[in-house]
Amino acid sequence: MAFSEKMKIISSASAKLPTEFGNFNVIAFSTEDKLNHAALVSGQAIGKSNVLVRIHSECLTGDVFHSMKCDCRKQLEAAVKKISKEGGIIVYLRQEGRGIGLYNKIRAYGLQEKGMDTVEANTKLGFDADERDYLIAADILRHLKVKSVRLMTNNPEKVSCLEKSGIKVEKRIPILTRSNRFNKKYLESKKKKLGHFMGA
Image 1: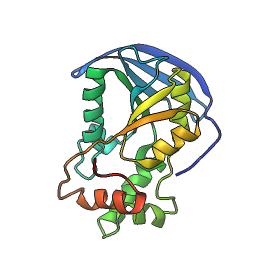
Image 2: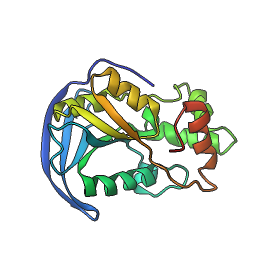
Image 3: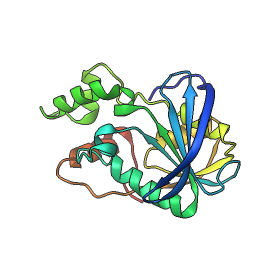
Image 4: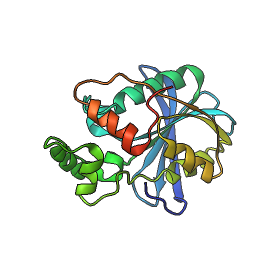
């Protein structure tokens, strides 16, 4: 995982966003990395403590095209449903392919088709196993004056990064999805090589 200095938020814009799961306020952020990250807010979460939060990295193939090679869409949908009911924030980071971008992600997919796992493919292309920077998410949460969170994640790096950034993680809430024949190896690699918690 890549660490950087605090990502400066240049400006933000907000609007109401009705969805099939409920009504949200969407806030788009103009940041120094020019990627326009976003936050989906349900209920009275801004300025609160112990906020239910999901930090989700963009996955075009999963989130939009319903790819079965990963569990990204399943995790996002579960988070949207839960946060719609209970209130909270989804921080949506434009960090496709664990931060290597869509083009390189598809290159990595090609290597996976030849037998490599997701970590081996990324490193073969010259990247770290995970290039994402969650300090951006921490900066967004600070901007929203969130004091502490209940974080919906299986990824220990998200917990660690928020804690190091001064945002207390009161509780980690797992997001469990069922594997399929296309993503079984991918999920096993996340558990064994990236240390993700794949159980309760």
